[in-house]
Structure formats: C-alpha cells, structure tokens
Image (tube, rainbow, N blue to C red):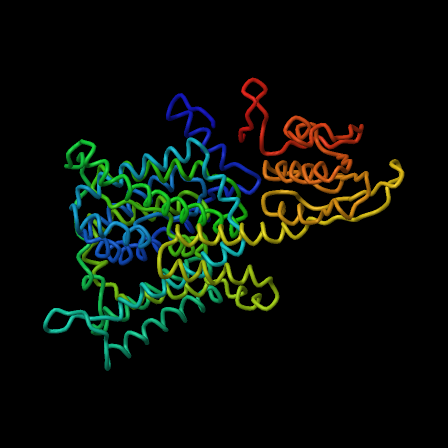
Length: 537
C-alpha cells in the first residue's frame, strides 16, 4: 500500500496512476464531450436519486445530496475515470428497515460506519479478491442489474388518482407516454448517425422535453416525483447516542451496506474497464467509496456506490476522464440550488427512454446465445446470479454465484485424479501407480478408493510426478493409504513429493524416496518444528 504524507502527494500519485498507456488526455474536444456527458448523466440522476430516497423512506434531498457528494468524491479519487456513483436501489432496499425502526439519524450514522469499513477494505487491499469472480457471475450480474433497472422504470408508468393512490396509467396518457419513450429511444439510436459532437441521450432529452413543454403535453414531469429545490448540504454529526447499543443497531446494517456497495462498485469498475480498456484501481476505488460515504453521512446523505446505468450512459456518451463525473456532480448541485424550476418541467418519459436504452446496452444478450454452447454449470450460474440479483440483492447473488462456481470447479477437479498402473523397473515384482491430477480435499476419497493392498504385490510405488499435493486433506489421504499397506504387510514407496511433504507426512514420511527431480512447490500448510503442529498460512 502506497503511503502519502500530504494531500498534495496523494493527488500527484493519483494523477500519475491515470497516466498509463491507455490514459485519455483531456483535450478541448474531450473536455467538451465530458462536460456534455456529465450534463446527460446529471439529468438521469435526478429521478433515480429521488426514487431511491422514497424507497429508503427519506426526504428526496437526502438522495440528491448523496448523489452529489458520493459522485463528486469518487470522480476525483476513484479507481476508474468514467465511473459514476450515487444513491442506488441496492442500498436503499437495505436502508428502509433501519429508517422505519430507528429514524434517519441512525441512517446517517450507519453510512459513516459503512464508509469506515470500506476504507479498511481499501487499506487491506480486499478489492483484489474480485479477480476470483468468474465470468459467468459477471454475466449474471449485468443481466440482473439490467432487469432491475428496467423494473425500476415501471414505477414511472404510474400516476396518482383522486384518492392519492398510485395506479397504472391508462388511456391517452399511457399512449402518449409510450410514444415519448419510443421517440426518445429512436433519437438516441439515430443521433450518432448524424452527429457525435453532442451525446445522443442529451439530444433526445432536449428535443422531447422541448416538444412536451412547447405543446404543453399532459404527461408526468420530474415535479410529479418531488421538487429538487434545496440548499447546500450542511455538516452535522448524526444525532444518535454514542454507546454500544447504537453500535449494535447500526453495525449489521453497515456491514451489509459496505459489502453491497463495494461489490457493485468493483464489478462496475471491471465492466467499465472492459469497455474503456483500463485495468486496476480496485483498492483505490474502495478508499474513494469509503471516504465519500463518510463525508456523505456527515452531510445528510443516504450514502451510495457505483451506478452501472449512469456509468453506461457516461461511457456510451464519450465520457472518459474524471471531468465527466465531476461535471455530473456539479450539474446536479446546480439543479438543486438554481435550476430546479427547469428540471421540474422535464417529462419522465424522456428519462425512462434513456434508461431503457441503457437496459438494452447493458444486458449481455450474447449470454442467451451461449447457453447451448457453454457447460451446463456455467449456464446455471448465469441464471441463478441473474435471478438472485433481481429478487434479493447483488451481494447475495455474487456470493451465491462464486460458491456454485467453486463447488463445480472442486467437483470437476476431483474427477481429474487418475492412476496409470505399470510394472516397476527398479523393484523386481513391484507395481507403480503413476498419479495425475490434483490431490486435495475434493479428490481424497477417490484417491483412497483407487488402492487395494490385498490385490497388489509386496512392493508398491506411488509416483506423484504428474500430480500435486494441494492441502492438508491430501496429506491425510496419503497417510491413510500408507496405513492400509502397512496393515496388509506390504511395502509402499512414495516418489516425487515436494520437500515440505517430507516434513508434513507423519505415518508415510519414512516411505518417501528422495530424488534430484523432486518438485519444489509448497502446499497450503506449514509445519511448526517447535510446537509440532500443522497450521495454515
């Protein structure tokens, strides 16, 4: 972990980290593209932040402040230029119970603790473990989030009836809304064929909004969600008792929120990296997300993480540098302070159309075509992760997907342990078992069942030249086989085991035949000579 003595030193190192071979310089043309892309993202952030605030049971400004603060800090210090962060639905659904039971001040305290946990994850470089996430889990992740984004837009097809209840649109209002949504989608598709100087979503939002305002078309506007007008967020320490009881209340929520936030952020980081060609930055992203949430908790925000939908809008609009995310956050603040009256007039149908195009671009359509060509287990992982993401939450989906993938790998690897039997050239009348495949906890049962001392000659040689002893369970299995041959009065010799196996084997240690070509790999245990105990690294 790099150490920084001053903020200036940290900033210099941060800038240096961006100057990789694939670094995107901020030319005047790129700056214009980034600013316009940031404006597009800011427009799409408004209804999302408001809607997620409603989900969490807090004031809309709490969601907007989170989108501004988290978006600004992560854009400046995050691990991937081009990523957009803000208030998300994945976090909001966890917060709702906390707010309902204990109030919004406990939410702010939880967000601060959530940020501290994320900073610790960055300090200890836990983000590197995202490399353990298999590709099928990534496909399930993007498919699940695409469906979640699509379902979230369905709420904008509801209106308030005379009794104050939300009901589905019908009649001419529904028809006009659908028409505006499809018009927006068409403009996003057609604009790049005419010009790429202005982001297509921005053109679509501007034209559709101008059409609705000019002809006073009666469709829901942003103002029908809530007013975005407000002041600057102010610093305040969460008003909660500072005791163990409070910690016991907020800690479980903070752990869940920190995990969900980091998983969604790091997976989005990888996804954006695949599109932009940039790699790395996981630990830096953890630090940035954590720092942003700490600040957000002290300034009345609901916390947040990376937003795959808005990140895709930014990347697809040409946003490639940190200026795009900074612009989005600053435009959002301008909306809150000065331009709420204009933003309130924008039809929700235009923003829904933008998000529908995000859904189309985000969903991994090739995963459907691949279902007949990839292993059944990989297809199962894609489907399970997609379903769990939709019906539960992202963190649970990723954990489930990784566990299934690990179990499938262990099962397949266990079947690879094989033995080729031949007569011994060095021991007259002896038999050699030439082993291949990894010997670990999953393959030990198969390994032990391969040997039948009563059917073998007086001398048997186990040659591990094509195998590898992986863990302590493997050592125990070798000892068990040695015990079987010892009980049968047969002579067993072990060849081509690594030097650490010599010390770790107890019953079979004296049976090893040393050779100059013994392997030198280390297994996942170490022998403590002083205590005589086996312990894990």
